[in-house]
Length: 212
Image (cartoon, rainbow, N blue to C red; front, side, top):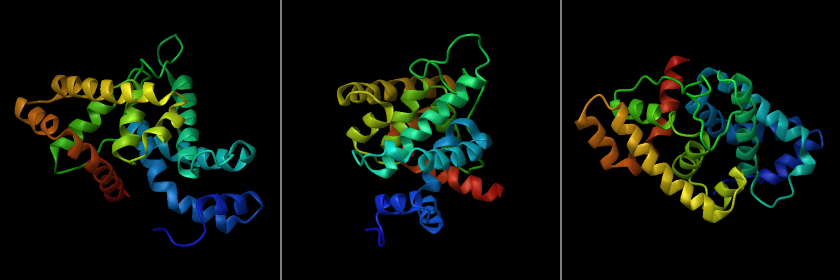
């Protein structure tokens, strides 16, 4: 259990001008938020992470404690991501997160240096999914958010979110089959998909730390 003030208390103090409260809140969630962006837009995620926390501070009236601060942050992060992808899309039509992937928008996840080929393959396959499917899967496996909170982030009903997760896993397995350099590697990842998905955030974080 986390000790000290709750996220909501820290947010309230930050909004009242307590910069240290803001720093504490930032430290609690920066790894998750920066990881959210790194798996989709690579180095551009650093700026988007800063914008997400700034948006949290500048729109205090929108947080009504209907969800956790953490979930609210991911909702802001998704909106920041979509604004960025729409402004960066290389094709001359509106970016649709239900059908377009980050690759379709001319972006891509951060390359990771890892001894596990499975991690690199899985990250690449995730990047080919429509953005809202990728977000749903990552919040489910990386952050272990409840279904209701993921639905709140994506601004859709719980039933729709459940269908999205199921369809997302199917799309991910299809992408793995297309991008795996060998059948053996595809079988390794697809055969234990849940385990590899849950391990991927640490692999991304380790790669980022090594690069620094």
